[in-house]
Image 1 (cartoon, one colour):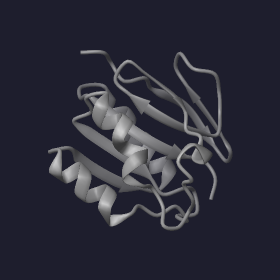
Image 2: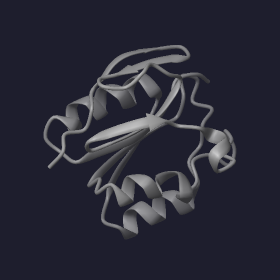
Image 3: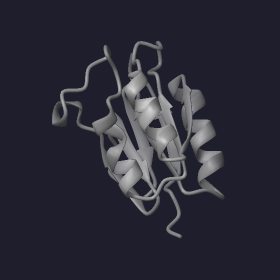
Length: 121
């Protein structure tokens, strides 16, 4: 199993992830990750994280997923997204971003962990 990369720094508008250039928002999964570009699928704070946003995590073999809500809890998650992950048998956690990062880093030590992280509001 490829290990999921650790988040080494999180602050307002900035994340550092091992093996990746620093950025603002990230999609992380076993073996790597990339900048999470909200424009790719038209993601917005409301209605929030869409099923299409988590499909890459499913495709990359994640067994547990952490979704961040932003530093000010403004990012929502669509019920359809949670239903899709549940249908796939994937455990999901939805947390404020700093809590999400801490949880993800712990899970990534032993699990095929993935996540979507938003480092601002």
